[in-house]
Image 1 (cartoon, rainbow, N blue to C red):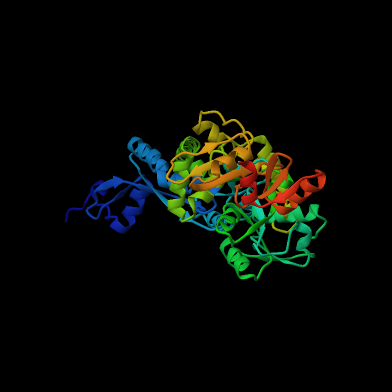
Image 2: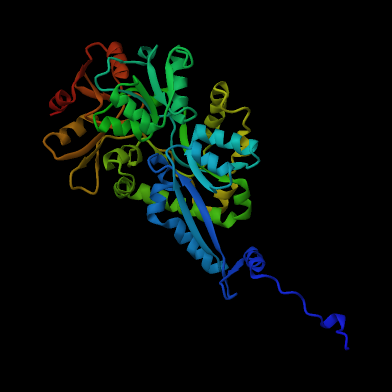
Length: 452
């Protein structure tokens, strides 16, 4: 019998079930017949469709398709097929939960949830990084406390012993806690705070099961626009910046740095679009979310409450550091190293365009029915003159003290001599009247008449 030489012996066949994962790990996968094909990479993005000052990293970005365009171009260069899985959430908390489980790669959320994101990521060995901003307001005007239109409550002092709905750990909750502290009210003892999703809180306010609701964009504006709420406290009175931003899993940022670059490039393109075509952007977001376009424009318009810019502005990072003690006092986080959490390098690498200039003072703005553009005015009186007898879709006016834009017909108007001033809340209007002899609160219809 002839013996086989050792070097001629056949090697055992590798089962196909074992071979396929190996091929995929090497950058390719295979069909059933063993034909190699380019691998597919899925990028999972968590966003909040109705938190509309995140739209440049979520709703608007998704509808424009810019991220997919950037990834398609990358795929042509590296032979990979990229797909985007957009996952919509009501708040930032579930996005953080999914990120720390390794199931969401990129997410957008508010400043307080971002800190919880940083803390949970570190705690669960799935660190995250803040890489960009979406929308911000340097005074804090993105968060508002509202009551029912028939409510007798007129100021924060009236909230003692009352039931207030909010989402604990959110930016709106932070506004509520800070505002109550300034008013000498203990948020943990002097009010009954209910931890509820925004939609649940809105329904509770309408049903009368809570006395007030503290929420973030766009809930207060939507409820006011629909006649279901009246503003009690304008977050801009705190004069502390609030913003939403983009966070990414550190592992993903390291393994897919180019994909993160593509996301940030696409976000910048969406920001350009929103700033250049604010009415079209508002209509697009409204179509995607079911929100009234007039409400979207209140926040995201040319003079909107939110300013959109991806830049990690120093004043925003400084504000983030001031948020840490508030969350610590509520036992929601321990120490958070904000400087380690903030990573400006990806944005610098991906986007060469400079930051946008800070927003100037908001101006009164009129949106007529059937028009694809709006008109701005130098004074509230001029706005009211133009609105009289016109087919108005929405009229917006800035608060005389904070600059927060609000619906003209929902604002509290004050006649002071020949001047007409608007305020988001009754409390602010009353403070102005108390400090100006002869000034008086007037209804919207009377203000229109006085302006003519």
